[in-house]
Length: 462
Image (cartoon, rainbow, N blue to C red; front, top):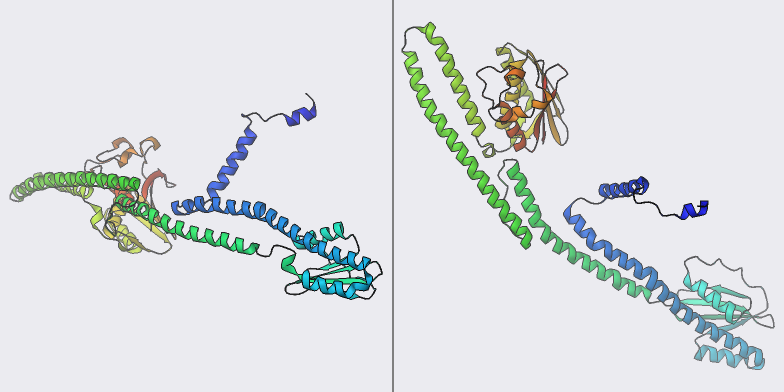
């Protein structure tokens, strides 16, 4: 195979270069095209319309305009050529020829004394009239000429050297030499397109609003919040079906949550009744030394019941409010001192955040308590940027293996070997923390701490 043949050979389909180019093109469009449904739908309507108008303007209009201009310029040039021929044949009848040209042909003819023509003006690149009229004069008259298509507001002047050296000046209306009403077509085309785009925008907004309402309702439900306004399915049939399916799913989930809460509340109430009787019996007992362990067991059982209730409690009932992270971290430092642990904190950015205060306080308290339960030194850092709040809780404890870090978020799961949990742990602290974080639209993740233990990272939008 020669070099030329190899250049013309088709590129194999498994060649990585075309695939890389296509991948780059696809990545470019994904990054630069609008991501919203309304903008994409509008683009689907507007883009074909713009392509169609471009084809009309550059194909149909350009050819139509040039064809009409060529015919009009040819007719005017024939009239001028006829006047020149008559003057050459009948030099004694010049006055009558000028009168006939003015009255019958619409040409204002003037005979100028012999001389030089004005310097020829450069022909504009985009001027169809200058190009077409110059070509017609060269083809039909074939004499030295000078052309000024901007002679007046509505006139064109053509000067031609006749046989005796004199100059024939012809002035005619510009609309006789080219199609001057094409702008009307453009106005109608763009005006109609504008009206169609406005109608499309109005219809699209009516179709997009039900989808946006469904998205807001799903987002509020996902965060455990009550929607600002009640959701009612509307819009197209498919959107209504999706809305009805969402409402049915929401009702089933809320019913399950209510059943779980009622069950745990009932169990906790029954157990508290027994614990209260047990505590009264302990209070009237005489041997305090033997009963100290029993009192501690009762306290542990109360703590477990509180954990169950916290896990079952519906966080969506609490409204958003302002929380001072600085004050909260100072309270955690004081609590750590009571447990004889060291806790330091730092805040970057505004310390006031918009969250559900009680729930977020419980979240950070659970993470801090989990950290000082398994380590002696705890470090909490909060970074409040424009869109997100990120809080990291580090400890110097034994840590958790990477393959088991997701397991600790499951309710009632304990990793005794990894974290040396004491018997009083309920296995709900991290589950409650993640539930609260996801209720705020964020999450809690675990990783390796630079202090040698575990790092818990909370990231929520604010």
